[in-house]
Amino acid sequence: MSLLAPLLEVQELDLEADRRKLERENLPERDALKVCGAEMVNNDQLQAKSKAELEKLARDERAVAGQVSTVAADAEGVEGRLYSGEVTAPKELEALQEELRLTRGKQTTLEEAELEIMEAIEAQESELAKLAEARTDTERRSQEIAETIKKEEARIDAELDVLTGKRKKPITELPAGFIETYSALREKPRLAGRASAALVEGLCQGCRVSLPRMDLSRILAEPEEAQVECPHCTRLLVR
Ligand SMILES: [Zn+2]
Image (tube, rainbow, N blue to C red; front, side, top):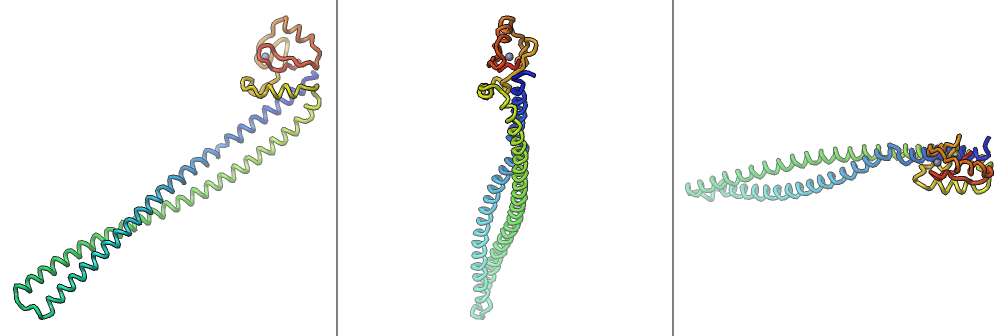
């Protein structure tokens, strides 16, 4: 077995850890949680609008109710005079009757308007209740999703711990300085986490390029514990 074989072992563990981290970052629940968040923001806006509408309707209702009592009092006043016996002239009585008819008519119109407002209030209240219920549902769903995320994170973190643990032994088997060079190379996005590669019959398994004969003989002449990079992709060669 090559002296540097443990480097490939470490790399496999690291690539596995990379996949786990990516999985952790892209848990589908994260998107679902965002959707819930947006739903709640939207719901809050709708509730605020609905509450403002309710307040406006309540104000309207109070105003119309006030008008109804004023007009009702007017009508009672006219009625009172009409039946008081004080007015006896037929023309005046007729005028009072007409006034009463008009006032009662006005009262009816206002009462109908008040009823309409009350119906609108009822509809708005039921709308608001539906929104509040939907908000509670989304909140609960959101909490459930957040819990699932926590569990998934803990599961992946435990797996990452195992992988970190498994790294220790092969690292101790490597010649000095290798893991440092390897780690620095892994930072290069171009290498996509594969900082080392086996050299098999003159072919770098990292970039799949056959090394020129001259490079190859130079590389093979190096002592095994020397750090040799692929001249093409710069990966640390395991030979
Ligand atoms: Zn290469």
